[in-house]
Image (cartoon, rainbow, N blue to C red):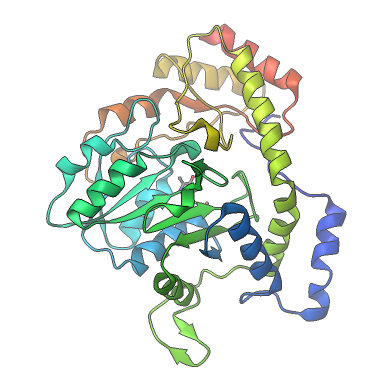
Length: 356
Ligand SMILES: *Cc1c(COP(=O)(O)O)cnc(C)c1O
């Protein structure tokens, strides 16, 4: 069986060695030594000053919304994982969808202004597949209309834009360290901001809103365990090697598929690309579904990322986003992980060639 992704694991022995001291210290959660160490290493690698390691990416988004005090309408993208819209609604806000760019699949910043009303409090945009949004334009609009900006950077671990970590943009950026993501701690995520006061608030919110006996705010539990942080510490030193291998798989696929009627999203900043996914756009939904089902017969599993276009979710008010709906209907993410065998890439590509 070949799955769309295959979680990268350190050796069993390395992980056991790492967690062994925990049987002595019995300190398993509440900002333990491993969580703090991982946070420090991540900050260095990503070159950001204020980052909190939390238990997952969706809660990271929810805390960001809460910490920025967002209310009313939030402009967002229909082309993302359901957690982006879900976090907005769960926090009592209302998603307003703005269609995406045909080339990057990120929110079309040129269409944002038309969607702004007096009820708009923020823009939550996703760096889809790690490709940067139109950061300059979004910043310009946010300043003009006094809106907050949150970037869902769940796919954007180690993405850089214009020489800076992609997480350094916006009021808050979040990342996911879920087992299916580029870097993982089994479950996990991070909240990044540029403001120490906001960071303090986020820290407080993630631990029930209190510091020892001082109960300051209403909070939630987004703390991480030392067993999760230990996994992160084992995977982290291998990350450059993982990305290097992904790059190889990426280029091999591109080579194998080069004569086929398929296309790909493009990125604003290839220098900062992280090789997190391998999305392919087919000519029609019919072709995409045929490829998916024919590969499935061979026990090869692609995923419809992202489908449905989030403006079509049954619990949101429908607002038309024709580009997102079109792309959602005919995109597939192919199996993509660092140790995907060359022979499997050839096999998958040949099966695709027979069905497009
Ligand atoms: C995975 C993902 C999330 C949610 O992250 P979790 O850590 O799984 O909660 C949010 N947004 C996007 C775009 C994602 O792909």
